[in-house]
Image 1 (cartoon, helix red, strand yellow):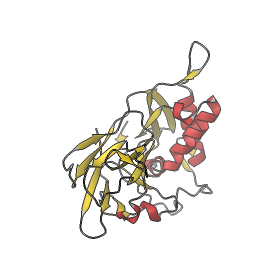
Image 2 (cartoon, rainbow, N blue to C red):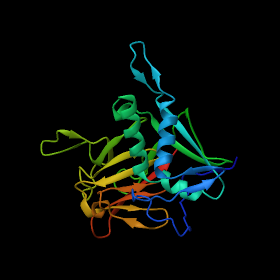
Image 3 (cartoon, rainbow, N blue to C red):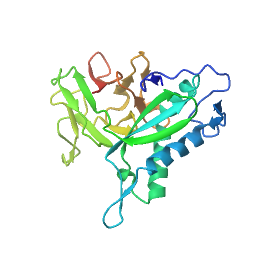
Image 4 (spheres, helix red, strand yellow):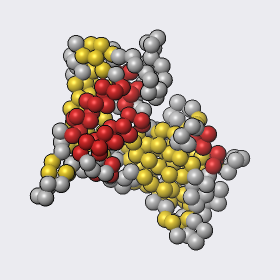
Length: 254
C-alpha cells in the first residue's frame, strides 16, 4: 500500500473535474467495482467515525478524543479524492452528519486526521489515534522567533496583539502574537479547525491580513465569499501595516 502525503497539493487534469466545492458536482470515480463521489465519500467517513461510538455508564455517547480516518482508493484517483479531503466543506459535512446521527453536539465529535493511500478498492476506516498538533512560528514583531503551540482539541482560537481586546478589554486572545507591535490589531483574526486543515478569518486587521501559501499565492480572507481562507502546513498568515512592515505566522505541524 503506497501512502500519499495529506499535505500534497491536489492536481486534477481530468476534463470532467471542476470546482469540487460546487454541491451539484456529480462526477464519479470508478475503480475495483466501487464508485465514489463527494456524497458517497462523506457517507463512508461518517459510517467509519460512528463505528467508534461508545457508551458511558448512563448510556451517553462517547468518542475517543482524536481519530485518524484512513481513505484507500484505486491508483490514479488519489488526486481527486485529495481534492475532496482538502475542502473544509467536506469535514464540516462529516461533523454535522455524525453529530446528527449520534445526537451529540459538534464539539463532541473527535478531532480528525485524514490519510489517503492507494488500494485495490475504495475503503474508509477510522481508528483511535493521536492527531498531529499545530504550531505558529512568529517571524517579525516584538515576539520574533517565538513559537505558539495550538492546544490539543481546539476548534476556534482568537489571536492578536496582547492578551486582551474589546472596548473594555473584556475579551481575551487565545494566542498573543505580539505585545507592542502597533500595526497588529488587538483583535487581528480567528483560526478555525477543519479536520486536517486550518481556516483563518480577518477581524480588525481587515485587508492587511493575508494568507501567503507556500507556492507564493496570496489570498485576503476579507475578500473571499465566506470571509475565510484555508491554510496548510508551510503556509503563512501575514499581518501588515499597509506599507512595508509585516509580521508573519508560519503554520507548522509537529
